[in-house]
Length: 188
Image (cartoon, rainbow, N blue to C red; front, side, top):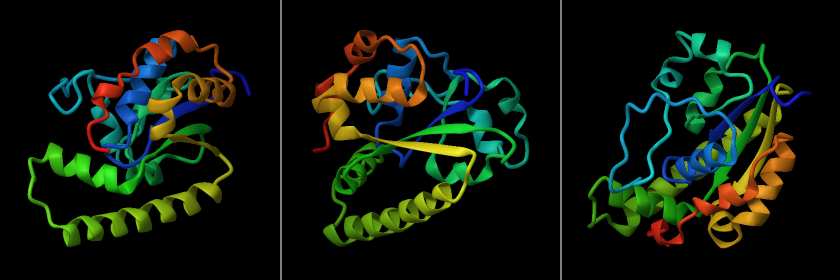
């Protein structure tokens, strides 16, 4: 498969490192689909790299017509809406669920979330991620590469090399690694 015949999807839970991955791909030389509507803020000071049209994929998948050879960010729940007539390579972000929940709570300003509430959210996320993993594994037009959030922070060169190999795309590894800022990993 040539490097432009598939669509690269960056997916995972919210606050799992999808924006970081999009930033890395962009810095590494891969074109990304983003509309810049959602601006950078204190939670994502480097930007969100989102495309609003992906939220409407089930009703209108027209944005996919020019998506081959590009990367686009898509929350895990929206993967189900992608049509089966295209090939996708998914970079699925994996982050410790406690960190995901803590980061989401911090972003929402919930500094007093209870342990029980957090554990309930972790259980829901675990169940939903297991379901999407099973669904993806049963689709022959999806190829998935799991990306460790901890690995991106701790050893970005290794993760970037694996991503470059998976995508078979001439990414600039040094440029990808240069955007990784461990200081932004605040929920540990």
